[in-house]
Length: 109
Length: 113
Image 1 (cartoon, each protein chain N blue to C red):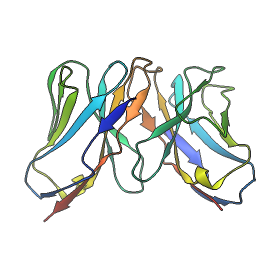
Image 2 (cartoon, chains in turn purple, blue):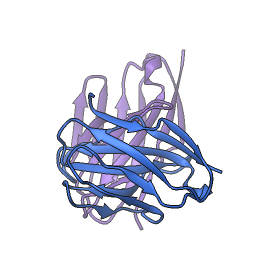
Image 3 (cartoon, rainbow over the protein chains, first blue to last red):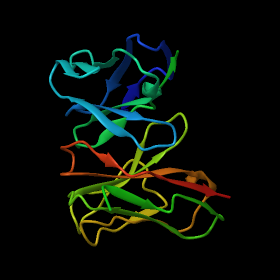
Image 4 (cartoon, rainbow over the protein chains, first blue to last red):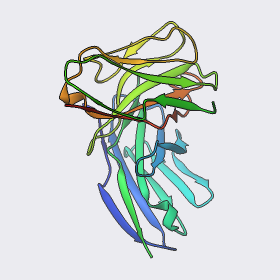
């Protein structure tokens, strides 16, 4: 079967750095996405990785290792508005997205 | 309209009733999707459409039907609602199927009693 694993919840302090991990086992791989979802709102696109390595976009970076079936999202200089759920999704061999259950990130002052 | 809209925002429905959730996008995206999101589970794909006139089944299609008569609209119909269909439903679109990032509507919260 196909499986995406993420921690259920994480807590971090304002101004700090946090790394959210995602491991996957899917039938084929055609890219990995990270989305942010604030409570009661729609998911919004954050990043996309298809090749190994680090993609940096402002305070957010995403890393991919295809051989390990592993990705992480790195958030720097945390702000209170970063409190949200972070969803990892993998595009499988049928080009459909398989979604993890999401990681709820709580930021404390 | 800017982006994707969904209607209604929320709905309480008696079991056995028929219900259509509406989704409209004005971005001229070719592909559209319907997901349900339940607590503790990832988004699950119900149905999708890669282009107007075509539809496909996702991971959890039973009890749901869709149509894609034109580019902009992608309604989801529950023919006879059951309590297990209580969920938050998100419509999404992308420029092309399976290629680009998806843009999501605000969601419809559906409760079936």
